[in-house]
Length: 412
Ligand code: GLV
Ligand code: MN
Ligand code: MN
Image (cartoon, rainbow, N blue to C red; front, side, top):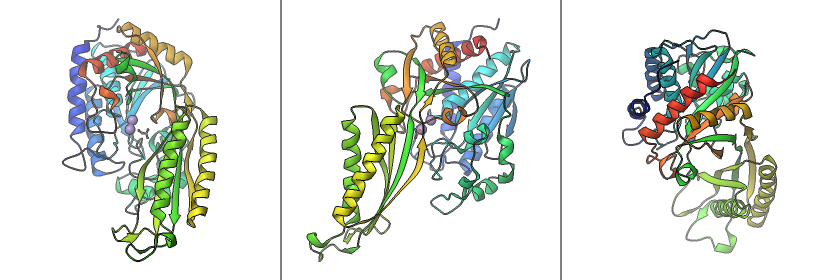
């Protein structure tokens, strides 16, 4: 048997590592690490250094995913991963903790001189947040063998395509197919992640078991009205694209509230290309993020929402384009892996609460490759995608100890 994990020490180590990684940012006063940027490079190098110290063999694939392999007694592998990219002005824990938990768990087995019946790959993905390109989860899709080459032509705000960004990062888009795991090689994927919601804190529990990851639809809505003088055009004669956009934002909020928790909808991005205080907006584009644990509820919401947006455009005499850029089904977590996570949580003194995830995760892409599971860790106030995001060292220590227990007991 291995030595019992030192929960306090694991928590302190995780905290130090989180803060070191959290200091790598594109901007001095807020955290922002986007996919295939110099900050991504620095973060990947740091993760690779930690992996080597834990005796993992490190490689990188064509999308920059850092892959640390720890050999086992068979070719089968347990994949443990999460992401090292962030949203703009994000927190330090969303993503990095899952990677760090994997490294610390392997380090525990390395230090104990243990061999396991399967190998472990710790994966640090770079594209979970979709902060740079109008696509997301490309790194995990490449590992799962589902990356669609059409995504290579998608461009960031500066017009740099994903293909060009891969080359600028020193990688070869032609080698993308090699990132895919071979069938049978990946036995399971497990991810430890902060909850990003308030339930564990409310129930006074440090850890939870994820039952499923919510499905997502993204709608890009663009209104074309007529730009005009703010002082001279009478109100009745205006075709104000921004006023139409405002109606869409409130419609999303009202419709989602009316579902009483089945669906959540958010407009977090609005673009007014020629914005000026004395100009009636001639053109606006907004992105609507719609999520639900139920595919049927999400689909019904999207259908009704599109009909209502068309009615707004007609009433206001606005041109309209609606493009659905994302349509991702709800991803169930594997029952037997969930049972393993629950038992591991009990072994460290927790009561495993079952939670569904409203946030997106790389597990959605990895589920196309192998069974997946997730463990959630309490975060203060449920706050995430915010610099105030915080998980205590003691909860992180418990999470790593539970992950170690899960690895020791899982049958792959
Ligand atoms: C990522 O955190 C997402 O859920 O969009
Ligand atoms: Mn995340
Ligand atoms: Mn996130």
